[in-house]
Image 1 (tube, helix red, strand yellow):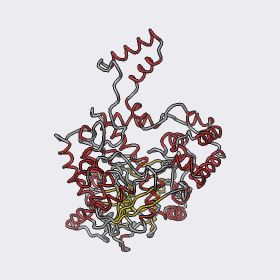
Image 2: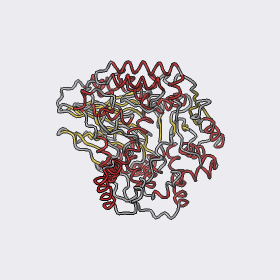
Image 3: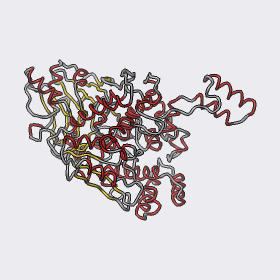
Image 4: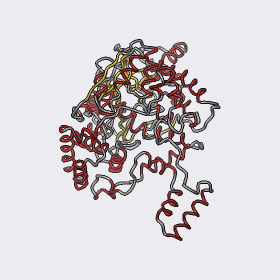
Length: 620
C-alpha cells in the first residue's frame, strides 16, 4: 500500500526534477516509510512507501526486472503473489525481493507484454504504472473493483498521474479550473462521482481498465474485466448459496490477512464487519477489532460490537465521542483531495487513528450491501394501483385518456411515471435530486456551465449494460459501478491511508464478486431483509440475535449534536459564513439554510456536506 505518481514527457519542456520532487512531497502521507524515484528522458516515476510485505530495502520501489527494461511502481496488494512467484521461479525468473508487487513485472515479461493476460492473472487490489523501456511505453492499470484509486491528466506536452487528485494540481502539472458539474453533483450526492473529478482537467482511470502512453500519445481506456451480467449458477436454495459463500469467504479472508505487519478488523454491530472479523479471528488469534461509540445514543453500536468481539476472542478497542462532532475535522480531512460530505468518513478516520497504534492493516466489511442487496432501496418498484394487471401500454392509455377527460393532475403524474426510465426511478431511492439547477447551493451565474443530467445519464448507460431481467441484481450492478467506488471505496482509501494504515475489503475480492453477481436476487433478499446468506452465516457462527438485526453502520447522532451541542453548532455556522464568501456559492440559500437550522428543520447530511466543502476550499 503506497502512493504512486509520475509523468510521461512528450515535449521535453517539463522541469522533471521539480515535478518529481513536488509529487513525492505531496503524497508523503500515503507512504510514511520512505520514497524513491525513477527518471529518464521520457518518464518519471515516484513511489511513496507504506511497508506491508517485505519490509526490507529490497522491497523499495520502483522495482525492476532482471535486465532493467521493465520498471514498476504499485499501490496495493497482490494476494496470490506466492503462487505466481513459485511458478515464475520455476520458469527461470530471478526475483530481487519478496515484494508481492514484483510478480507483476515478471508475469508481464513471461506473457511477452500481454497486459490483459497479466492483469487477469492477479488477485488483489492495485493501481500501478509499468514502464516498458524497450518500447518506450507506459501502462497504467487499476484493479477490477476500483479499490485503489488512480487519476490522470493529458496535454500536448505531457501526461501525468497520481494516486490522488491534489498532487497533480499543487505540483502545477494541471489546471485548477473547477468542474462545476462535479460541484453540482457533490450537492446531490455528497461526493464527486467518477470518472470526473472536482477539476476539469483530471479524470479517474475506471475500475477494471488500463491505458497506455507512448511517444505518439495516450490510448483510450481498455477494459480487461467486467462484472458478470448473466446468471449462470443453478442454485436451488438460500442454503446452497450460503454454503458456497461460507467456503469462498473463509478462503478470501485468509488471503486478505497476508502481511509482514500486524492486522486488525473494523467492527460495528452490523453483520458485514462481524462476519469478516469472525473469519479473521479464526486465522489470527486475538486479532484486534476497532469500533466507534456514542455513549447514551441510539446510534451507539459499540456495546453489541464489544459483545461480538468477546465471542471471537478479539482484543476490542473503541473510540467514544460525546460532544463537538466536528472536533479534529481539519486534521482528519487534511489530505482529502476532493470534497467529501459523508459524515461516516469522520468516524472512520477517528477509528483508523486509534487503530494505527495497534496495527498497520485493517479489514473492512464494505461491499456486502452492494453484493447481497443489503439496502432498503434494493426492492422491486411498486405496481401501479388498480391497473397493474393490465399490459403497460394499456395502463398508459388508461391514465392518458383519464387525464384528458378529467384534467386530474394525479392521472397525468401516473401516466408520466409509467413512462419514466427505470434508472430514474432507482435514482429517486438514492436521494438524488436531479431536478432544476435552482435546487443546489450554487450561484445562479453558473447555470450555463453545468450539465445537471451528466450523472443520471451515465447511470442510465450503466443500467442498460446489464441485460438480465433480474431487477434487483441490475440495481446492484449499478451500485457496484457507481456509489460503491465513488463513496465507499474513496472513503476507506482516504481515511485509512492518511493515518498510515492499509484498509482491505475482502467482500470485494473479484472471486467473491463474480460468485455473488451470478446468484439470483431471490436468494439474496426477502421482503423484510437483504443479505440472506450472510445473515444465515452470522446466525450460525455468532448467534441469531446478531444475524437477525436490522442494518447498521458507523452512524452518528449528528442532527441532535448540531441542535444541542454549542461547539458543533458554532463550527457549522462558521463554515457556512466562509462559504458565503466564495463567488460560486448562493448566499441567499445559505442564509435560508441557517434559518432552517435554528428552527430544527434541516437535513443533517447537507449540513455536514457544507462543513466538508468549506474545509476543502479553505485548504485549496
